[in-house]
Length: 56
Image (tube, rainbow, N blue to C red):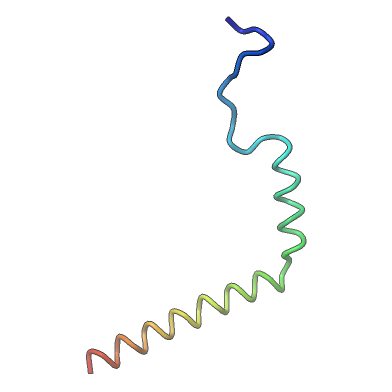
């Protein structure tokens, strides 16, 4: 029965969430992207350095 009160399976990203997510990404911008990119690269370098140091 598909009445007005029934619940249906919906896409997890509802129509209201998409503009909100896009707004958040615009706010994050290139500065945020570069920050997290550099942060990730630094962590990779740290783990690589520690691995080389431990293995001799």
